[in-house]
Image 1: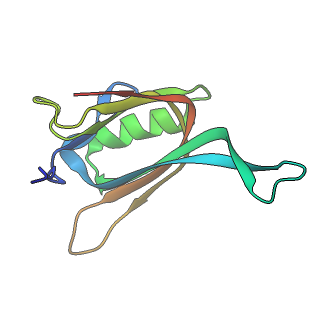
Image 2: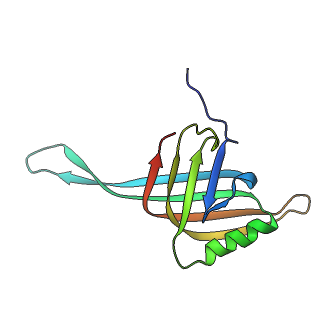
Image 3: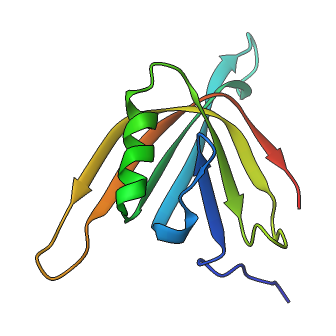
Amino acid sequence: MATFIPGYFAAITINGDDLAPNMASGTMTRNKNIMLKPVAGDQDVSALPGLITGDISASGHVSTEDILKLNAAFVANTQVVYVWQIGDAAAPDAGAYGGNLQISSLSFAFASEDEWTFTLDAVLSGTATYTAA
């Protein structure tokens, strides 16, 4: 029987700042460019692995402290370090990805009967290193 990881066991840090307490949702996507290579005289095409790219989208509630941290990471003209924890960071369930990223978009939103929220999109830079639990 499979052991599923509860969605509330997740963590993300950007530039060393822990955003986990306020996170509502997040997605990490990694893509590999697959090149097709035809071979003369062969009807079947070989698939060759190409460049790996990735991005992160995250959203959650925002505190006054988080606005400062997120803005600092957004306006940085250098790559910032991230850790994308899958499961409980205190007793790791499924490990974590880590590396560098650039935040490509950052937005803050409100609703009159709710709290302020943030959404960020980031592009991974270099290798997304996976460390097992």
